[in-house]
Length: 294
Image (tube, rainbow, N blue to C red; front, side, top):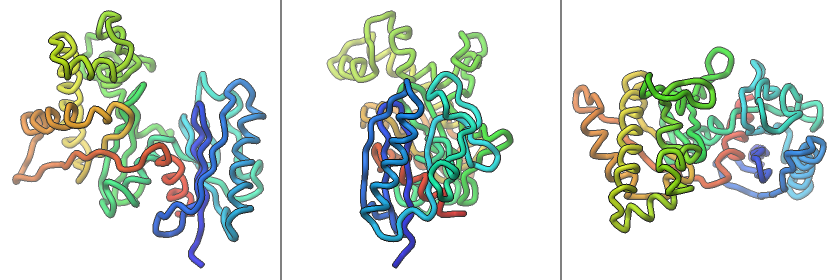
């Protein structure tokens, strides 16, 4: 029997767990609610999800991968730093709690692992991924391995500065990509006219000039950021995921034209920009892929 790995994605509202085989097939899924107000509840929900899968599938779960917000510690045995959310997550050793080997990875990096192993960038060795949603997360793959960097902080691509004179974002970076396109600033960017990017896109499609101007400014800044990343990391592929990518052609078509304008395509080489294939299970699948390495 091929090796079966369990991956768990610890989200703010739901805990998603999967069992995958060596080819990435999802053999079983389990969902549990997250109660951010009581760490005993959500920790036990993770254990319950794992045990449910172990009871369903023989030989599952000798190694477990966990995708979670925050920065992992050096051994990837726990999230070392996660201020403001999921109290009790920091420095919690999952192997001790679950009674089996468990390895922890940042959730955006885990999503990138799923896409690089089985999804939109399958078999690619040098990849970056951005998740466009409330904020802008990211992950970096170098020579087929996730790059976490010193202090496990690498991949926070949303905190690239695009305007040194603008207001600081949540971590203090002025004029960040996250603030340029994330849902977290949509009301501010539109003077309160829109409360979500989805509303903004709908107005843009109906010919609202103000909505179009706001949206295209955001897409232009995204293109500048992506072109900058290609100069720094020179990836084969850039994967875009998250709820904002549901804009479809309203995002990818103008982005394609803008990348042609900004990207340095030495020797005629260009970086492909693709939409993520995995949905909300990307974190769990990627965590399983990561754990399989150990």
